[in-house]
Each structure stands twice: as C-alpha cells, then as structure tokens.
Image (cartoon, rainbow, N blue to C red):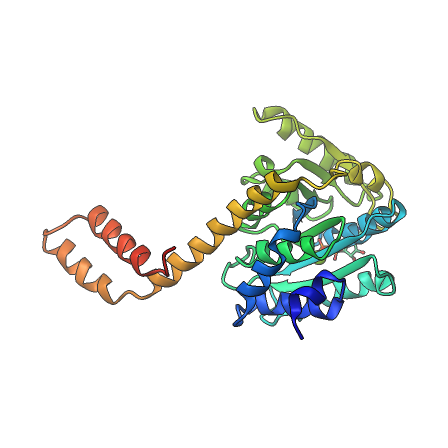
Length: 304
Ligand SMILES: Nc1nc2c(ncn2[C@@H]2O[C@H](COP(=O)(O)OP(=O)(O)OP(=O)(O)O)[C@@H](O)[C@H]2O)c(=O)[nH]1
Ligand SMILES: [Mg+2]
C-alpha cells in the first residue's frame, strides 16, 4: 500500500503505519513525509504539559469533548515517557479515551519518548506533520512535564498549557523551574478539591513576580468538564499556514540536530586522546571540547 495517498484520503490504518514508520525511522519514512508536506496547513497545536498526575489526560479528554461539541476534529498524541515500546500506551490514557473510540473525528495515539529522557521524542514534530496533513482541525500533544519536555513542547505547540493541581504536595513549587516561561496558559486542575484556591493563589503570587508577558490562569475540573470551554477558547480557530509550519519545523530541525550530534558524540574513541593532550598541557578543555564537537558535527550526517 502506498501510505501517503491513503493517509491523505483519511485512511486511519495508513496514518498509524506512517506514524510508526516515522517513529522508528524506518526506510521510506522520509518519502512519506515529503509526499504529505504540501498538504500541511499549519493546524493549531495544543501542548499539554505539567506535573505528573495533575489530570492532563483527563483534561485532554474533556478538551476533546468540547472540540467535538464545536464540530472540530482532533488528533491526540500522548508522549509516554515510560513506555519503551511504541503504542505501549499508558493504560489510563486508553481507558479515558475509550469514550471517543467510535468517533471518526477523534484519533488517539501514544508514542514513546525514547532518546530524550523525560522529554519529547525528537520525531514528535514529524508525527505532528502527518496528523496535520491527515486533515485534523487541531492536534493535542500531551507530555509529562519533566526535564526538557516543557521547553520542547513550547517549540512545537501554538498554545502551551501548563497544568498543575492541588494536593500533590510541592507541585506548585516544582513548577518554578522554567515552566512559567513556556506557559501560554496556566491551569489549576482539580478545581473541585479543597486545595484549588490555595494553589491558585500560590500561582498568582508567582506570576506577579515574573516580568514576562501576562499569562492567563484558569481553573478547571477535568472530571466534570467545568472550566474546559474557557480553555478551549484559547485554541486558535484557524490553521496558521506557512508561518506556523515554519515555527514548528524550527523545533524539528533543532531536535533532530541535537539527536544527530548526541549520537555522534557518543562515539568517544577520540575523547581519551583529547583528554591526554589536555592533561599534558598541549591543549585546553575548551579547545578539546570544541574540537570534539566540530568533529561530531562533521560526521553527523549527509550535507545538502
Ligand atoms: N478530583 C479530581 N480528580 C481529577 C481531576 N482530573 C483528573 N483527576 C484524577 O487525577 C488522576 C490522574 O489523572 P490523569 O488524567 O491520569 O493525570 P495525568 O496528568 O495525565 O497523569 P500522568 O500522565 O500519569 O502524568 C486520576 O485519578 C483522575 O481521575 C479533577 O478535575 N478533579
Ligand atoms: Mg497522562
């Protein structure tokens, strides 16, 4: 089967196979990406990140419900940090998404975040391209906010939503590390729990200290859907076209380059020799490091 035309005509099995091909970097994946490239329209990408257990998946499900009420189709990509196998989705995610399995306007897929500990798989942006070309009105990417992933998702997403919830001890404290800078919208989920007001006040206090742009702060109860319509209102209603595609392609090229360089650097045969030269006073650590990196970049792949 020729994957690209089938995918473009709405064939879900072709889409699933194309995603697997990209995820595993199988032969032919570049051809599929090239074949669908002109059919991308820069659909709005919603990034959902935040504390483990904050209710991200439940919130995604509620957002899907709301989008469907508005007659918009949606693809959900759950980037699973724990599963080493593609499709070995978080069981919970699957169960919560079962509501949508009969709906052709909803597509749910999990991918593993291999190679980027706690972060996004470096192939995520290309998978988003496939979903964009497959004709969904909106793509949601859920990722656990650990390490680099907030930063990664902000590169790909048009709207980055950082989710926290009361009751998880020092949740709000852990949000401090870099996450406020990437949030376009902050959400206190589990608004039905007693600690929600306190969590909100903590975040307000934190936001008042930051000198970045003003970030809307919403409260949701994902389990009942309360507050979710207000969040969905922030999702752009139109595809962003070329500019949106370029923005996320920047993230894709960056992630792929990092991957290539990291792989090249993993071969440290020359490193011991360089270290010896540093120890013998023939060169400095800085010079040795930049030499090692230049060699890695030189060897990291085809040019063109
Ligand atoms: N009370 C209450 N519980 C909620 C709410 N939203 C989610 N939960 C519960 O919180 C737990 C975690 O929800 P998930 O949606 O799996 O959270 P998550 O952030 O996706 O979790 P990970 O992907 O494992 O990081 C589940 O038991 C949910 O039922 C809410 O609004 N109120
Ligand atoms: Mg989840």
